Image 1 (spheres, rainbow, N blue to C red):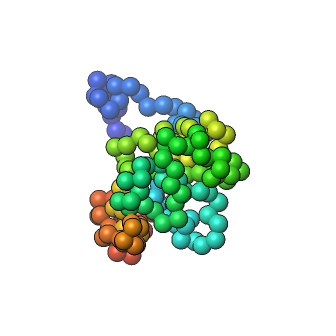
Image 2 (image 1 turned 60 degrees about the vertical axis):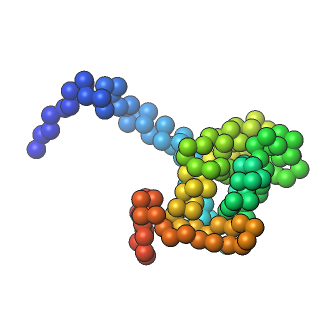
Image 3 (image 1 turned 45 degrees about the horizontal axis):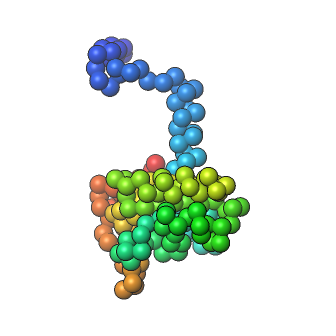
Amino acid sequence: MTTSRPSSAHPVLRVPPASPAAAAAYFSASLAFHTDPSDVAAALAAGGDPGFVLLDSRSAESWDQGRIPGAVHLPTALIADRAGHLLDRSVPVVTYCWGPGCNGATRAARVLAELGHQVKEMLGGFEYWVREGFEFETRRGRDRRPVDPLTAVTGAGVCGC
């Protein structure tokens, strides 16, 4: 069975795809810079030292609204002054902020990298942590919301990605 090549006028292929080698390099690099809530949750649930520090870069008011258990709170504006006292440069840092509409975790990761830390950003931030049904905490204690079926497999299923 042969398929015809779409017209280059089609918006999807107006700019042709990268070569397979360039695509492999790009996606490998992307994985070096990013992780996701499911992978972070699995590492934290495994017990013991996950091999990284999870850093919430939001404001105190945001932290009080909810945070990932075990995260270190260090707002982006304070990283340059306080990271040296709170973080060990030999331990990678995973940053998160509100969600995909916020680039706070990206800005925090940039500052940490400039200070000599290995760093990854958790895609989806706190929003997707909660939407995927993982436990979070507030001043009132720990809580969990039902899984949003648009963000994660519900029930005992595994997404397989």
